Amino acid sequence: MHKRSYSLLVGVILFASIGCQGKISHEDHGQTLSETPEAMAQAQDEVWRTVEARTDAWVQNDYEAYLSLHHERWRRFSMTTSELSSKDDVARFWQGMKDSEKTHSIKLTPIAVEVYAGGSAAIAHYIMMETVEWTAETQRRASGRLMEKGRVYRVPARFSDVYVKEGDLWLYVGGYRDLTCDIMPESPFPCLDIPSAAQQSVPADGAARRR
Image (tube, rainbow, N blue to C red; front, side):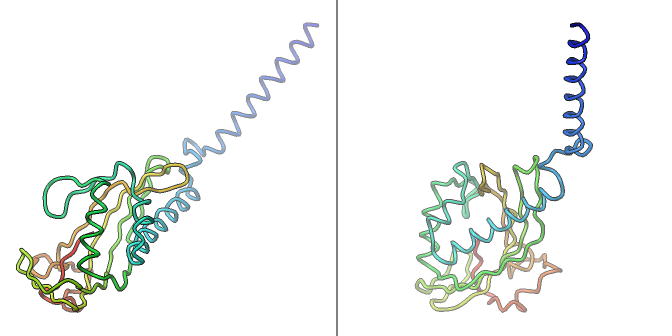
């Protein structure tokens, strides 16, 4: 009786040992399954496809699709103040931009997609080149820049979007974008690795817009 109990105990210990060894081999010396190169590459692809989907929604004037990719706690600096905008402000931003311009096309150039926190957070760095037509009446902005009705502008900008994963979705939770260096005609800091404003056919008084 004791021998049978002892044999059973040994069997349980061996089974548990094999299970633990299998888990360790999958973790690959401390690396969890979600941090394997394959999983990270998949996450990078998912994040970039989300960036493209958000851009496509903007070009196609699909507000619902555009908004659905924003996290409920989305925050980012306002265009004109040092206050933070929230998801509630997206509708006003959308309407204001769509009332004054028409996007013809947007070209995205990925720079890097970094995945963090075991595949639950990411930052997408990229450059955007937008071809946009000013549809509002000709006006001079506070910056002194003249916006001519019917004129088409090509506007480059740099983005660093922050995403978090909830379920199967990557949601845009905030980020940074700029029109610095040669993107801004008056900037004394040219982007050495981006064609100049003149080469991009961006008018000296062209739109300096931010998304």
